[in-house]
Image 1 (tube, helix red, strand yellow):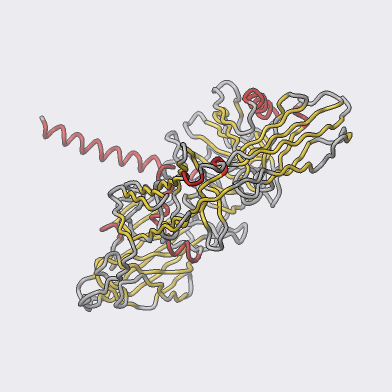
Image 2: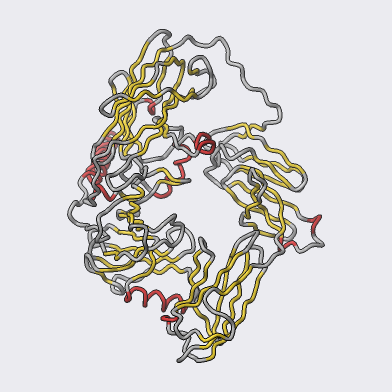
Length: 569
């Protein structure tokens, strides 16, 4: 009976895996239509390597303008509306009968019906930032119905539409795999190749150091690499990108695979992933190389304990085991975009002799931090906690405290979880502790605010960035400046009220505005620092109006602006 059970279990797991594979391959091709009625040109592709995350959709160009009409890619209902200062800005989520959800982000405005629904809820909550989950009966939409206008809201770096398709488990899927057509006849680009010794006894050309290899372009999308020698467990990495026909943007590729002596030993496809995997991008790339050069090299092997579902077939996790001296190996890399335009890179690697000994760098002031254990350190007024699993692998860190400054290495090693920095401010208890915060010190000496909590005399901050931190004080309140009106002015022709707000040290945390004592909605664009009220909201109806705006920074300093304006009712 037990044997039959395990046979059944093995068969079930095999069928489950087969089912997942078939699901991702047999995606609907004619269900979704283009969300814009212009030719689709991309400034970003699915799975593209971004800071701390993989890109979860397509960034569609809107000719450097806002206001392009956005259409529902299929019939369904608006299942979520999220408005935030950063991130996706103004975002709309539409759930479809086939179980998929499409996402439209960085929007300027919604269709009148959706905008009316949103504004009502914002005024009820008296908040610009809001998240709503309408029922399946509240906001139904038809395929190709206009649902919004494209914009540049949130963390967008320029006008465009961010478009996603997510499955029923909320995992983003490459929209190109579901019939969204993007013309592409260009091959991927290859910029760098790098070899890595993966332990303390491995070598590249006689040294226990990673090495950039000389890349030699050939004809027909082929490259070769100048021959080199290696010993031990070795990994290879590549810096690559892709372009579509619509522009020069260097976007992400779709598929990478490698072959060792003719046998496939590694494969990676940017087809679908789960959001909780995304930060593992910092383990997949050469993080130190990125921080030093701003270019990303993807490792063509699987780091220890990586959960990325983007990885597919592999032998020994893609690691090359080179131990028999004098043997020469052929290693081939094939990189493809979604339209199967490809490039091929060929490497010749000769096994070198095992090193007699490798000098281990001695630096007595470095601290060994085991990634499998929580690290705690008290130094002067500071305490530092790096939790178990925050580091992807154990490392020697430069940790040093001096007066009100704490150095925790440099930002060349990634953290997956927050480390906690705490500071005992008892020595400053006679001062206004609410104005003190923990800030990250840049290489040029600027101090950037890190969200800081206070409990008694203890300040604490959570951060996933190594570097130097210091205690700083912000006793300057925000500034508020009207842009399109003056005190005691008639502004009947104005469609909006605009004010520019700024805070020198810690940034804007919150704001609230009233007219004649009644709440009015202000939209905040953090990139420009502009607050905007739209008179179409219908809240301002009196001739004489008393405006009051209160703006608060991240340590609680506040500024109040008051003015009178007149409008014909």
